[in-house]
Length: 507
Image (tube, rainbow, N blue to C red; front, top):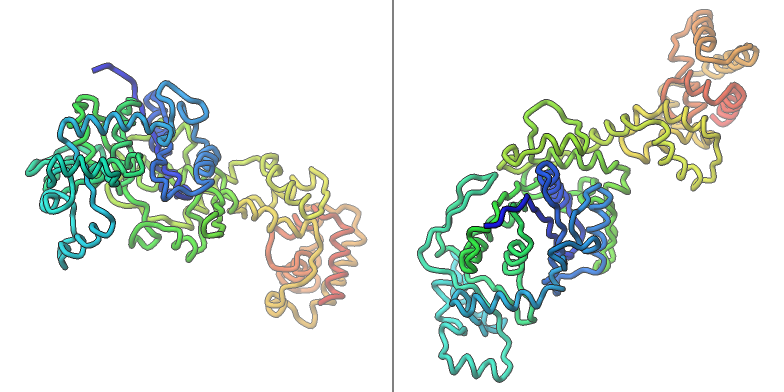
């Protein structure tokens, strides 16, 4: 066998948006390839034309680009195994289905949809569902149960047919999964899956195996849902005589709902208020829009870090990883067998941590367009100082605007719940006296303001909160925001006093 380097692929189907579980599959393939100086390949598996969704292919590619996952070979870059889109490889599969038919490892099946439904009703019991295979194939309408003349007659008159794999009887199919260890399956439990459809296109099973072989894929890292198909794929490698070139398999655990009960779905995200797609998805069929991590204000680095740890354990206490650190630390043998619970709060925690790693200048590039969209033209240094004051409070990028808006706009309303808790009959007099005092000071900075507040509250024999809490309500409109003195100094004395007067008039 020719010695080649590590080659892995991510092979999505354009049947809808990319779930975060799909991104994780792509990420693990990417990390493994980069760590081993291997090749990371994108292949679009679009042979199921009935489930094709317009725009899904473009969405998948844009999402992976946003995540920072670059491919070595794909539809755009090309490569030695082009084309990388299965619908453009249909002629290839016809040659390989003929090999299986000639070797007696596959057969033609003429059963109509109504005949298959009738068989399902007839052979299914309360304990067992109908399976087209060892027990039933000779009772169905196929080239095994019919004479050669009958088959020829059917073909000549244009009857539609599919090609099914012929599963051998009473064989143990054994392989080692890199995550789950030894897996063995009795062939009698498998059904004769369709390999080639009546529309002239292969099913996933045939195209997947043929393409992995032709593209010299060395490791197949994919979701747990494909584990039941692996024994049949191994049989195909054997039937083609490719056992010596067969890739190693690793089937990833599921990403579970936050409560751990079942696979995470879009409905869970809708119900609990978090995205399950990397980017916003506009469904052209259902006319629905699903929000994504990007639009919700997640940084791609934080998103990648979060999903990397959904099922993989670095073996240390480290949680924050750059992409390069993930590449260096990643190993397939530290992927868990059991599913990983998605934690919405932890996802925000990761994003918060990554926002803290951004410079104020970097965060300015996110906030400045929002300011302009709201008709605000502000001095750059002023915006940067506002960002530095609220940065610690920001979990998602839109929080930058929510936490700084009061720096750019005086409040139009005042939180009545806060007012009820902090406002007394004496409050207006206290505020007016303090405002008059501030209006006469020479220097308006943190140090002098702090001293004046201390002297004022001591002379009036009041607690600091009796002054500062009403001031915050008047200046900000709520009890939110960074330190009150920091807000006052950044706004400047004139705006600070103006807001106090306006607030006193309105409350």
